[in-house]
Length: 109
Image 1: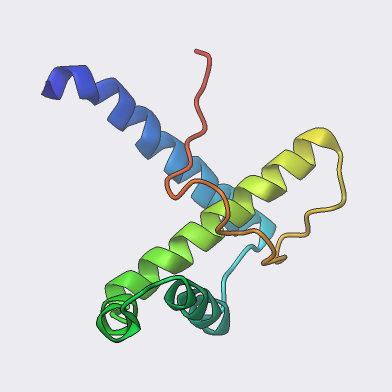
Image 2 (image 1 turned 90 degrees about the vertical axis):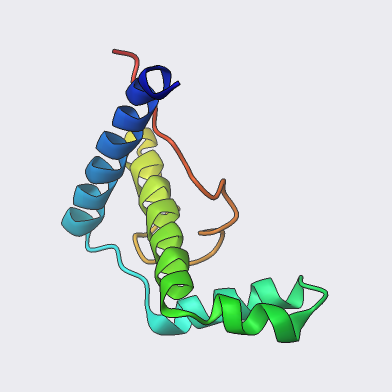
């Protein structure tokens, strides 16, 4: 199983590093206020807000949410670069977490 999953794990790691470098190069970042807003949005969709709030507010979860927001924003920027679109500015939060929670950029090689 470990050997079977190794190529996928390698691809995900490389893709993550490439997206991180692109985000740095494009100046893409996420503010604490944006993370807090996303937490509030997630809490609004949760039945037991009092149980969920402490979990979503941990430093690890805040970091995970910020990372997902940044990754999705970077993917939006990459799509805009490839398509020549000017719709997606680097720091546009709209829809930044509406994509898959663990996006992948697969290569054909």
